[in-house]
Every structure is written in C-alpha cells, then in structure tokens.
Image (cartoon, rainbow, N blue to C red; front, top):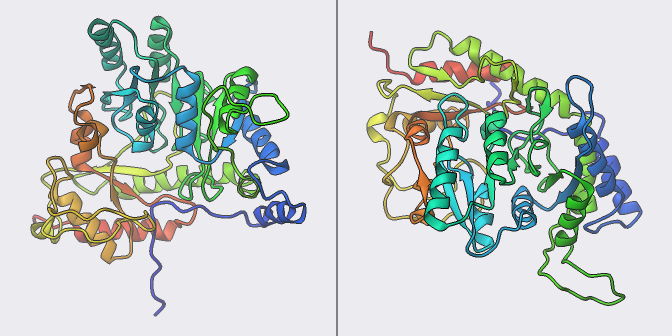
Length: 428
C-alpha cells in the first residue's frame, strides 16, 4: 500500500506548462540576476493589470512596486504615509506579526483594534472609538490604519474607508492573504492609499518569497521605489538625503511570479471549490463550524485558508494529554528557528480540544494549525494600547485552519474530514 503523503495547509503549485522556468532561464541567459530587470517590470505590469480590473469591466489605474517581502511592503507603505518615531498606527489585532512589526521598525506605536464576529476582521465601531480616544489621549490622530484580509476574507472596507476619510487617516490594506479577494467587484488592496501583497511560498501565488505594494498613483509608486533602492538622489555618485532600504524584488523571483500569474485565476477557483467541499462535508459534524463569508454579495473571498471553530464541548481523542509536553521543534513545516521555552502553556492559548485535534491530525499526516494569536496578547506588545471586545481571543481559543492549497485534492478533503470525524469522541 502506498504511503500517504503529508497534506500541508497551503503550498504553491507551479504552472503546468513550466512558464516559471522559461522566465527564470531568460534571467540567467541575459545575466539579469539582480534586484531589477525585465521580469520585475513585466511582473509589476501583470499585477497592475489584475488589480485594476473590476468585475463589472471598469478599470482602475493603480501602480504596483515589487519588493522582497510582504513585510517590506508594509514597512514602506507606512514610511510613505509619514509614520515615524512617536506616531501611532491603528492595526488589526487578529493577524500575523508582519502587519504590526514594521510599525515598531519606524519607532512608532501599534494601537490594536479587535475584530467583528462575521468576517473576523477589524471592527469598524471599535476603530472609530480608538481614533477618537487616541486623539483625546495624545492630542493627534493615528498616522495610518491597517486592516487585514484574514485568511483572504474581505474586511468591512466600506465602513473602514468611510471612517478613515472622516478623520483624514490613510489606509494601508494588508491583503497579503487576500490576493484576488474582492469587495463589490473591486480587488482588495486597491481601496486604500496602499495595498500589500505577499508571494511567500504558501500564498495564492508565489515567487518563493517576495511581495508587492499597490500604490494609488505613480507619484506614490516612485516614492516607494526610491526608498526600496536605498533612497539614492540624482547625482553621478551616491548621495543620500534619506535612509533607504534594499527591498527590491530580484529578477529571478519575478520570473517565477510571471509564470504564477498564468495560474492565479485557477488557484483562486480551486480554493473556493475546496471551501464549498468542506462546507458540504462538515455540515452534519456537530460542534465544527466552518468560517464562511457574509451573505452580502459584495464579499468575495479567495479562501486562502479554510478556517473553522470547534465548540469547547467537543471532546477529541488524546485531549487529556494536550499541553503536557514542551514543543521542541518548529511546528508546521519549514518555519525557521524557534526559541526553546520552559513551559508548554501561555496565558492565552487554544482550547485543549483544538490542540488535541492538531496533534491527532499530524499523526494522520494532515497539517492543521491554530488560527493567528491576536497581537494584543503577544508578550512583545504587552504595553501597546488595545481596543478589545473579546472576539479575536474567543476565536483563537476555538479556531483551526484546514488545508486548502492547490495541492489539496477532493480526495484529500474527504480524508481530512474523515480524520476529523475519527478524532471526535462520540457521546453515544
């Protein structure tokens, strides 16, 4: 019997016709193995063409700058918004750390805002409360607002933009997980002053690493590109009037991206299909609730990851042993080096049945992970202001991410759901 493959959460898939290799070969053949070049220029145009195409056939005129990482895109977007030492930036708490860490890079302070329960993204009511309260406490408004498309789900962009415009605060859309997601037919990342994309190896498309920044106009794009190439002034020698960064995407990585653009629509369609299959197969599994987008037709998620919550009353095999041992290696594939810890528990962690399911599924060669731990509960941000309603903490305790990438087949989804059913201890 053939040994079962490990089913990972989300791994990129190369195009069937090998277009990535074609463009990479061109880079080597022409010796464009640098952080600029024909592939970078072409990939930026590909991305702009995609971002500017509305579902109704109308066109926008956004510009795109390719960078070394999505984190770099957040960093430069905030820099271009004028964020500096002593400023504050409002950012969604329920997200990955790359949404908030660049605020610290700039010497500013993150102000975390909790989520609303339907999309799991930034709560507009709390956002406005935070803006008013920060103005009262500090005498000035936050310099930027960073909503996040958690797992690809569109945020309440109409309300967020309305509030941001009311107080004159620029919006940096973190659509790193939301490439191809739309709100009212318009691509996420094109509403605010800037929109962040990521091409990490687990995203909707990949350049192996890398990211991009969608800019509202050519002037903003030129500013970002200047900062991304060490902020060099126009002299025949190197003259710098500002601190720049080496953040430009390489021509080789951009070649991968050009090939990936040929399968982007297919990848988005596949993720949506997998979401629908989970919905069908999990509908009768008591205590497991799949996270779905609002019924409002304006919401069009790419379902980068399929997420679900587990009722605290559901019992999972091995639950009595959850959090009994300290993790000694990185969890979830090639996640890099982790620092060893003394205790297996923290003051905010997933419920024991969520951890037990993660361990059970891993033994079945299925990668399932907890959802993001809210940033306001991270020790590194213990002193940061936070406007909290308890939504993200509750979801973190009950949430789990299920595999959804292009490598996940229908048979895989059936197997995953069968494993979940096997893991549940029946009351009968």
